[in-house]
Image 1: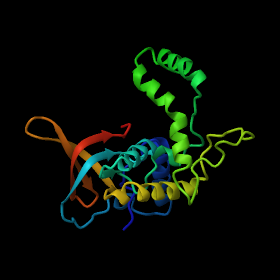
Image 2 (image 1 turned 45 degrees about the horizontal axis):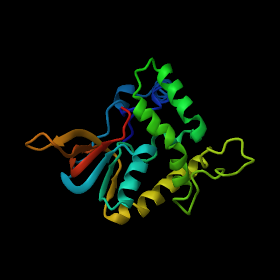
Image 3 (image 1 turned 60 degrees about the horizontal axis):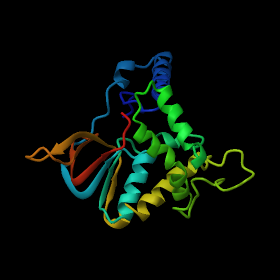
Image 4 (image 1 turned 90 degrees about the vertical axis):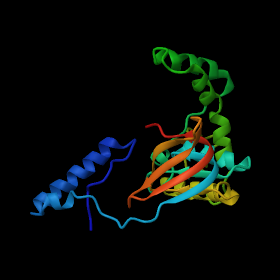
Length: 231
């Protein structure tokens, strides 16, 4: 059964809407029943499950992947939760990553905060800007099957922060998460949508609940929860 009764993709809202509109138009031109295709696909509901972790990371974009990998390297058992089938988020579509050398960090942070009418948290902006190069260098040497930044360190490259070919990016992420999160007893849960942050009787955060497309749920019991989802 095929259906366009699906969610859009965060970060590609207009593209998702355009594709769905085009599909509807094609069905109409072919004399098909648009309403019949607008019904979400049904699934047989599976069993609810639970998973115990030290850290739960919600969102498997580049930030979430980095967080999960580094936590696993530090010895944590990590549950990485992503609502779509592929990890990588917007980085699967990005051309290049920004990199700021120490001599421009202060001016970059100042300009950033000013341009945001002083509504941006300068501490968080500084942490991001200051750690761009260490993050790139970590990813550049973290895998062997493919290098996320093949031009990093090349003095002749016009775009040293340019990412590897689009088709190779899932290879990099899969290897990185296999070598870190999964190797330390953790797990990557794709097609799981986080719906609730769990708290104990004292109000302390103690995990995350996620739903699957078949209607079943995954409960992750965790000592810490990181939200790495911009939505």
